[in-house]
Length: 118
Image (spheres, rainbow, N blue to C red):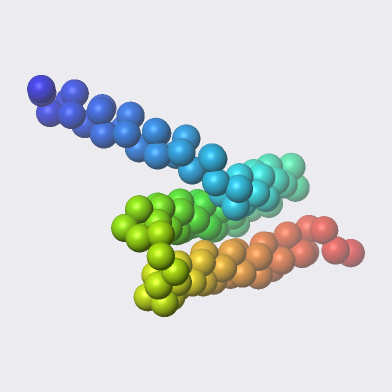
């Protein structure tokens, strides 16, 4: 297999992973919210740099949620027992997603506030 075929195949695997993420409820909710935010940034015609920040915040929340889901599935595969260590790891990952989501929300208020509030 040539390097180009391997490279293209890696993209196919990545897209399969993204499709798998759509099966996760929280990912789908965050995708809808992110899509609304990105769309609003264009509708409100905010400056390009701020649009880029909105896209980056959306991508960070979605990527972190996908990683959270992957780690959770891995831990469920390793053990179905209710182990304290596994619970702590899952909570840490959920906390990481929440940190990005809260930061993105605050950034969204700063960016959109001046366009939406009189």
